[in-house]
Amino acid sequence: MALTLQTIINFIETPFRLKLLAGRNGLKKTVSWIFYTEDASTIEFIRGGELAVTLGLNYERQKDNLNITDKNHLHVFLIEYIDAFLEHGGTGLIINTGKYIQEIPQSIIDYCDEKDFPLFTMPWEIHTIDLMQEVGNMISSENMNSSSIEKYFYKAIFEKENFDPVQIGNTPFYDAKKFSVVMMSFDDKLFNQDTGKINRYIHYSFNQRMNIQQNFYCSFIHKKKVVYIIKDSNEEFLKEILQVTKTDKYFKDSIISVSDYTEAVEELAEIYKHANVALQINSMPGRINYYEKLGVYKIIVGVKNKAILRQFYYEHLGKLNEMEKEKREDFLKTLSLYLKTGGNILKVAELNNAHRNTILYRLNRLEEILNIDLSDGETRTALQVALYIRKISSEFGIK
Image (cartoon, rainbow, N blue to C red; front, side, top):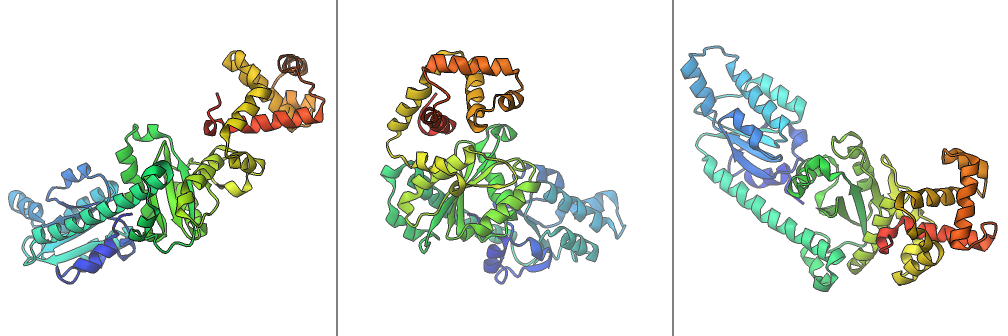
């Protein structure tokens, strides 16, 4: 969780005599840091989410050095700044007026309103260093708090031996009636495996586009997935995350899953597994993949002794591991389609893009290798369960 610009302004607006000129609709954006600049060319170095402060010193220098008298020059100068901030994910701009820049043109105010880019003025007698120190302290404090909340939930799921459920009283989730886990997959190649860059993008770009109060969720990155812990009902959150992913440049093809609910924070590790399974099974981008709709997979995941599942799989399909991987995959695909179509050889051949005789050969070989009779109903049921187990094999250590 990060501070929104609105939250920061609530604290500093009066003591620093800030005046919001434009971009009110952008106040829900989160702020990663406060950034001082007098040169638009340095804005390319920001990482996203920064609130900028400028005196307009460069504007004055340009006028003097180039002998500029054009009244439209201030508009051109500020547009360059604002466009650079918009391009690189800046949150807003504070202009210290009174010496170098006296008054903001109406055309700039209109432009910032159009772009939902918050634009503030601050009187010259207020020192920018005081403002930056105050905002920097607020952000640092909130970042430490957010980090502790993320670590708390991370421990709840992955380090239960170091987890103290009582500490939830020190988080915004202290009054939660129930919890759920939402997952969103991503291809880490998009970020060159830079977890820090992914985190910043999620916190200061992706999350801020969801119309959800930040006290109702927490997020962190784990194994190429964004993990959200949701407080109470997740319906609005799911609607928002689905809407944002549709147009997001990185996550538009992501798969989103959601667990069932739990009333106990100690059970987050279990429902995390549920969300993870839902991410794997019948998962498609552009929709929410619900654990509650997984049918028989819920029974398999619910088995506490995973050794039983591994044993069951190897008893029924383990002998196929002696084949080369590519050949084994062909045989398993044929078997899966055979069971799914109720033994319709022609349909299996069509779906497998293979000749009928090829399918018959594979099925005969399966009967020989596994020493089974595929016409037997109980055998088919056992094989189908073994295939279900294999589909979520990462949960049970099956190769």
